[in-house]
Image (cartoon, rainbow, N blue to C red; front, top):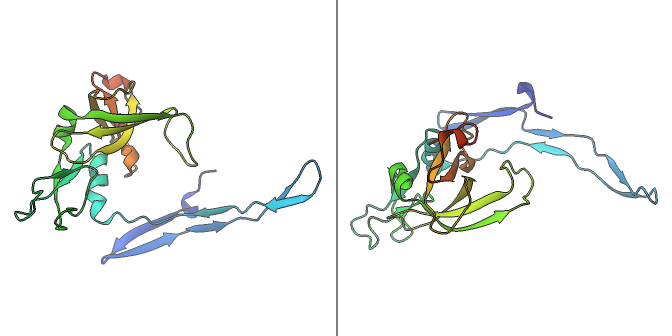
Length: 199
């Protein structure tokens, strides 16, 4: 059952510190589990409701960008690094070679013109709290000039290796999570996009 505003936990940042307010933990009464065949006690339920505070730190620009229809990446601009100019998607705060802080870049146009499926897997079952429609078409996406591969979801179309795909973004009601980014096959029309998503 959805929580009321009084039952939710909220967090603000004031003077550089997290300031939680509201309810973050709700304990409910345990319920016995009886074996219907024998009538014997087999265990108890242990219902808990917990709100976690998940800090994005240096990755916050990536998740904020998704809600604005932008795909942010990083690039090593250290003149002394052997891999200078390497672009990273998924977003990496530090260069894995020289360990210097990377430069944040907007690679939306690169993604819209060069993204293609590197590999894929289709799953018909998922774990708890899944919000994606099934079957889920997980795709690994490669981009021209980017040295890493991004895992995402194909929302429209059938996956094939090397098939061109276009990023779409949940800009209408962003969740500021990775599910705000999905891909569709090239040629998908605006009317085919999932609700809340835009090119």
